[in-house]
Length: 280
Image (tube, rainbow, N blue to C red; front, side, top):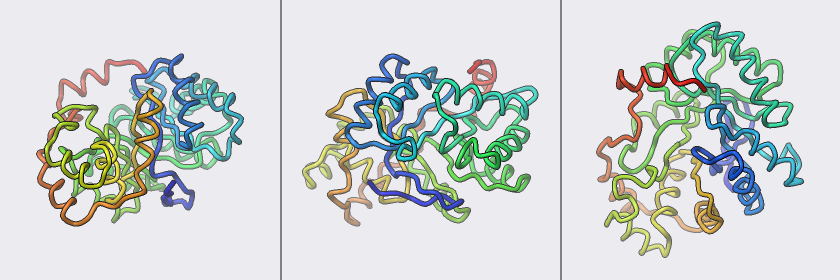
């Protein structure tokens, strides 16, 4: 497994295991399988409703806690962001059955953002999380957060895939020392990704699957990934991406696929309203 160093010096696996839209009961089984296969980064969130399942799997696995990198996320706090953020992490830790997480992310760039971040800085200083970061922050929102506070986010987890390649964000994050982590790295199966002729041809050239080509493409660009599957065969496939390298011709062909097609638009007012009304 390749690791990347975060801006506070700790290391994070470049490939993790996500549990978005997996039930709590199914999560325990899936995470146990992922840990057995060799995954050591687990990504969950308060709003997913499956932190307890992740925690049970960690406990049952017998793997030392310090060998597993656990990420969870703070849901939108519209009122009293400072105190509610501290309570939210305490609740997440209780569900996970852990004393700390390795990475705590602000899940959405909405609500009482600055008070949320101030609380997250204090939680980091108190050792409740080894690093703090954000998710779904566009560049302007990320810069606003950075200029108003003391700690630069270690990670920004954002939608990134061949049809939404985000070259500007990759350069921006590198300049700031922020690791870009892709959610939806396989575009959640949308936009005909698995039947795309360019990706299929590159996969055949390397004797790999389309999924492996896409995940390798992201990692080669310095983007960390958290693919999700409840099937062991897919888990193994998604992790096995370090035995080949995409060449310049491959990269140039994949670059032609970018058309800014997005799964989730965080700048759509109706979507922002829906998120604000959704209780985590």
